[in-house]
View 1 (tube, chains in turn yellow, brown):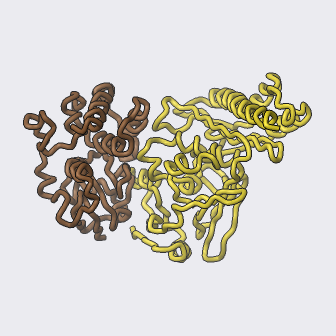
View 2 (cartoon, rainbow over the protein chains, first blue to last red; view 1 turned 135 degrees about the vertical axis):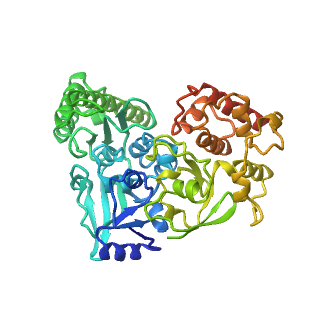
View 3 (cartoon, chains in turn green, yellow; view 1 turned 45 degrees about the horizontal axis):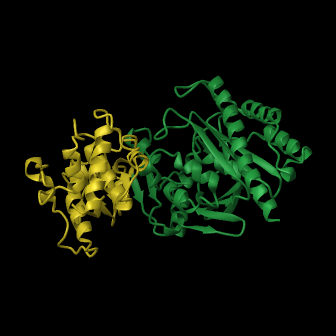
Length: 296
Length: 194
């Protein structure tokens, strides 16, 4: 094994071009487990922690450009107003020690269906900035996950940053596990209200071969909210609408039975989380709505 | 490969390090500092917790090469680290820190340390002894490093703060209640300036 230690992003791209099998390591919270357990013996291990820009972020007009290695702890502490869903998701990652090291770039690189960040990214809307010596491109998050632990990266590409839409409305995140800390999600659910476009987006984790959106549920809810004038009148969402939304979210799942839970439990739990997160975010939206009306 | 980094305030050099080796392995097997414990090797148990450039991390998940040029504090250096912090010098020069030999020779001398003064224990270590928070002791080093860092950041933690800060450290003996007592005790002593 060779240990590559690029001092700059350009050096990292050159090294990855020369050695496409090189395994990038940043926080190490996935890669080192595989090496410690002898599940993986890469020819090249490429340390990205010398590249400072990967741990930096920029808050822009409409998006946050989040460096691939910004640790979850930083997202929780510094980016909660802009990225509330991702901040909540980050807080559910493992433990303080892991959150101090791991970041969204690693979650995307591993592309496990159980990665905690994915549902939040899907719900918020995001693009993954990847680059190789051939050039840079942005992959919409909806096209990023291609299979179990597979993503749209080419062998010579590295993840540089994630561009996440800044929250324009309430966001929520929910995760099922046996305790609060140190659990891989049995299943997880992210939901974001986008009052600007009058849409709702979802993200489901650990309940299909890849992280997915519940598109039929989103379409149904978007139509129902529009039809009932909910975005304007700020009324409580009709229970039958919330139930239908939850059912459609459960139906979007394609889960398996495994040690963490059964497929039918996952479907059920996703439905429960969908209903709850919709209620929480909508209550929050209504609260803001009333406040705005009062001011006007 | 060779790795140069600072451990407990002293520059160290480890040779013949395998590229896939963890920082934990280097500390224990190459530098002779077995205070950081090796249990799960997957970041679940926290018994290998050290500070890497001040940040608590699982040393089993840090590739040795990633520690190049960085500063590591292990449980062996915790007392000195706490002493320097208390002195609030912030200008630790090359002569400061704990030498490897000193660290290897470190003993928890509880009998002489009832007052918590001058016995080579950090306040949080003393509190663990006084509160009976140590049973088999395997999880203790990681808990000490994690608890000490939390008290540095948050001198007046709620129980929820303590539980969260220690949520990455598993203990199978105590049921955690004595550990909670110890951290509360350390926080109280810290605020009283004992």
